[in-house]
Image (tube, rainbow, N blue to C red; front, side, top):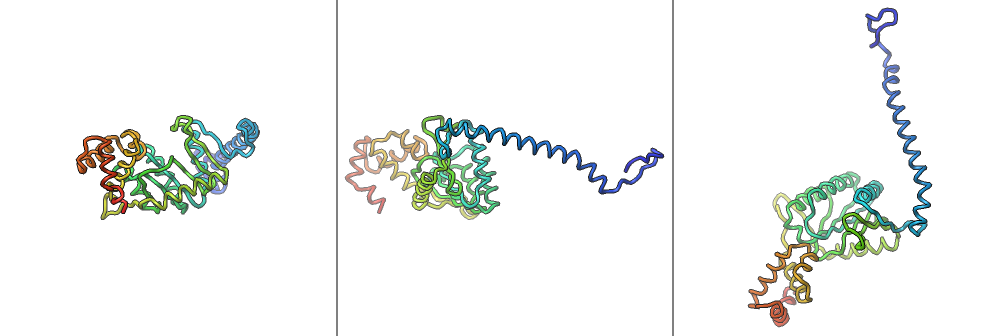
Length: 281
C-alpha cells in the first residue's frame, strides 16, 4: 500500500510483482556486493598460492603444516564439506573434553545426514567416561560405528581415503597438525586404521544396556605386560588412556593374587605362573 500522488490521504494497492521487485532490489544488491568480495578474495589468494607452495618446498603441497586451532578447524571443515563417502577417526587418550565432543557431534551429525559412513576408534578407557559415552550413544544412533582398543596409535582423521590429518610431535599437539594428501601415505594410514579396526571391540549403547561391557581383564593383562617391559605407571597410563591410579590398582591386585612384595617379584611370579599366557588362551 502506498499513498496516492493525487491524494496522500488515500492508500493505493501496489501490484505484487512491483512490490517484490522493490523489496528484493536491496537484498540482491547486497548479495552482488558479497559475491564480488568473494571473487576478489579468491583472486588475491590464488596469486599467493604459488608463492606459498614454493615456500613450502613442494609444488603439489601433498603435506602441509597447519598452525593454530582456528586454521586446523577450518581445514577440517573444508574436508568435511568435500567428503562424499567415508570418514575414519582414531581418538586416543581416553575420555574427551565436553567442548570437543560438542564440536565433534555437530560435524558427525552433518556427515550422517549426507549418508557418509563413519568409523571411530577409541581406547577401552572411554567405556567408563560418561560424557564420551553420551556422545557415542548419540552418534551410534545415526549409524556411526565405534570400536575400542587398549592401545591405539596416534590421533588420525581420514576423509574419503584422500586427505588425512595427523599430529606433528615436533610442535604443540593442541595447535598444530599435518594435512596429508599424498596418495601413498594416505593409503598407508588407512591400512593401519583398518588393521586396528579388525582387532577392536565393538562399542554400542542401548536402552537395555546403559553402559557397554568393560574390558577389565584385557586392560589388566596389558598393564602387567607393560610393567614387565619396564614402563612406569605414568607411562602405562598415558599409553592406555587411563589414570596412573588405575594402573597402580591393576598392579596391586595382581600382586595380592601372587603374594608379591615388589615389581621385580611380581614380574618373576607372572613368568613362573604363566598367568598372562592363560589369560590369552
